[in-house]
Length: 365
Length: 121
Image (tube, rainbow over all chains, first blue to last red; front, top):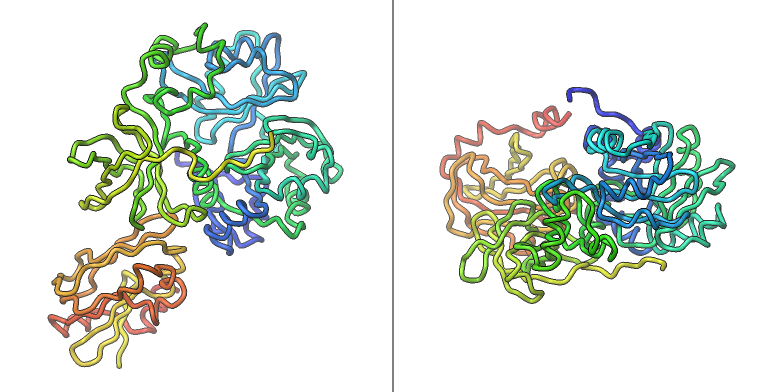
């Protein structure tokens, strides 16, 4: 694709706020604002931060028995997803790998699906080809804004009292600043918060209403990445991909009991086998003992020098106050407390396998 | 005391045959918040263009390349515990190395402040 990067409905706001714009998955997005990644990260952990996530694909599914049909593509129990509820899931392929991860919401007369920016060109045709009798429509005229952090309920609730009533993974339509928005209590930072789908013509105005709150500041993709990593949340393309199974990725919590038992989704043979017998490798948290960050691709070795796997995401965790990472290791070496070495620029740096997440998730259940 | 600048966004001040090397404010601003610095040890010799350290920000790792031939005389140890100093005073307290120059004539290949300011325009 040689096209110029696309701009979200919030582009002019990013520029006005001093956002440092970068090309991300074909979109011109702010990696940070003048506050900086560390400050924006802490802002989200301690107060509230506003993120533009409009680059992600927003899709409407209409038809009969959409939930049942989604179960043919995903190992989640979407047939029993109640109206007003949202559920994290993923498309699996015939080999049991993950094609993409997504959030599905039951919006009553339709289903609302959010997929990764770079994978809309795969996911939308995939749904159109395989969801028989379901009308699959991508929405291009709405922004998607995340307000995340312990003060998110105050920031959003002052403008939209209905937001206070939502629990984690619940969704509703509500008026914010005179315009109807879809508001869902979820996110990808490990903090309480909302993702809000706003008509594009009102997106900057409504975002400015949130930012007018003393406790809300804009945050970019840099902080979004360090926040999700500390929260132990997988990034598609880094930590999960077409070859990794959900069991390897420690995502078995996202497959509901009935689906684990009954199967009936792509790759069920491998996934059910790994549920019973365990997978050969496992995604784990890794805490370097020194200060050097271990980036994607760094080799993980046992203390006696055997290769165990590689880092898939690694950075500096501003809340942890040191480097944090995730990576795959051989399953028999994956217990928390296992000492390993990370080969950073040719030198072995000591590290330890730790339980995820690095910071306590702070969801409002 | 003359100050020279490299295209790799380093500054060098020379007093006698001892030079002090660091990164420019412009480089520090581009890197973002520095969280780790990997430095060579005193006594290490290096050639122009070779990697002599790594600066890691929250976002990414960036190599430091030697702007000329030399030997490390002294390492600024304070950066290990306080890497953020590279954002606050990269052209002051947060120098990276004191070095002995192998060939002072290599300084002629570097820029003065006007030249550097023109580069970063």
